Image (cartoon, rainbow, N blue to C red; front, side, top):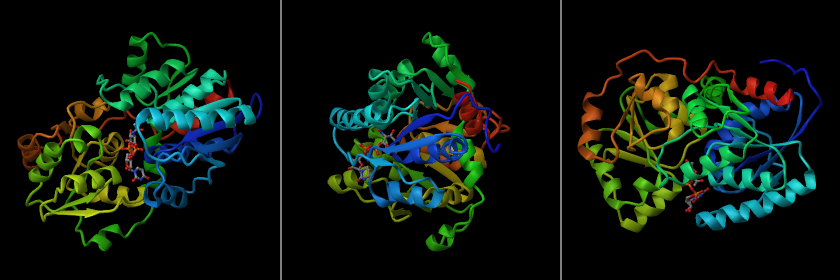
Length: 356
Ligand code: UD1
């Protein structure tokens, strides 16, 4: 990566993060940004547990947030409104040249709306993703954010096309995926998670489930767990999932080992060494692809269509038979391509920001 950029002038940039995947996405961009610009980081506090938030800052060298709004959990409207209120105050006070938001969480939308209403230009990293399922809160967040952003940094060509189909062509930049940058940055950092969990490489499945479409349905969770009965599986459970399982009184089969959420570096180690991954996370579908681990996606659609087109990912929803079939029979059928860029997305983003 370069040491600095040809600058129009040094900018004051506010970054808004709040949920686990945003810490991962911001890590490589922030490192790059701080070479030439002043970055002020707002943490909304959407995620607040040590293992959902602090551990990422500690282990990935992300600078301490300058502000933490401590918003916490709540309904969508309550959480988003509370974030907007806090972000607005800071923006008015700090008068940034640009506000950067990441991905598709409530923190993304809150940052974008608060900024655009005060006439601060918004840069959206991971713009243009679509699942075409408006029942997903993330789909609402990303669509609205894209439509109020001045700079749209797309991870894939598919994302550029999605934006074009909605009439957005100005300020659109295909830069590649910052999650690929992060995977390259941290992929070789050592972790002893396999020893800790007594796991042998290529001899276990890795499960994560946190989407409301799965967690809010006892039947879907039961179906996913049943499909893994008899297959040694490690399951870092998101707090949302743990809470709902406790509410349902739902137990997993003995072959599934439930553990607390793990750090990014530990997760990469698990992903690299799992036989297959079963997940409803967006990020993990790509991380599986980056490291060449077959992925079974526990959803009916995906934004990351390239992983499917290249034959490394398969959609199984929460259908027990389909999941079982994929566990036993799904084998990747093609080469992994370069759809997610060359690991230079962060550098390109900062270069474009610096020239604007
Ligand atoms: C959020 C994002 C989702 C992203 C995910 C990554 C939205 C709408 N969704 O979902 O896109 O994939 O983060 O993890 O923004 N909780 C805790 N401790 C925490 C955080 C959450 O116990 O540190 C529990 C609370 O019970 C909370 C629930 O998890 O109600 C859900 O948290 P929330 O931030 O609302 O959404 P996520 O499911 O984490």
